[in-house]
Length: 137
Image (tube, rainbow, N blue to C red; front, side, top):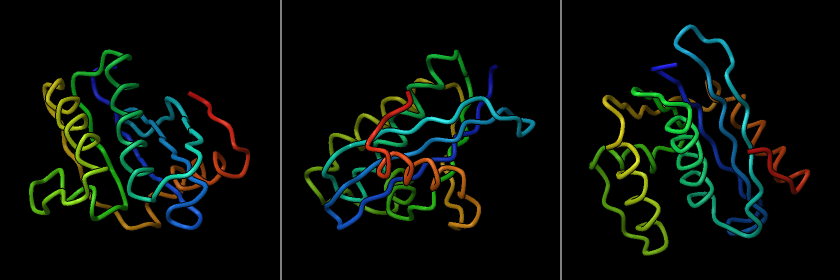
């Protein structure tokens, strides 16, 4: 599949607190390709958001995708990747750099901000990771 759509989300209960991430992967036609989630232990919500993105991008590259569309309800993540917000938190900087490097490996990529209501599947996966303290990658 040359183009994949990634809906990514992170969850943290306590911020920092018990955290997890979810990635709902679909094809260009909207058909489900994969539902990924991961338990992170103690982390901030922003770290969880970046982990969702990184795992989604690695998955897409592993599937041979040449184009990727990413949808996130994290304004911070999207604006940082667009270059509109600076990455001020030292803990996020390596995650940001890794994300930039992975995005550069695609022929075409786009990261878009969506309202929380349009990211329900990824949100449910992130919360499942925290509830079950498990990963499905």
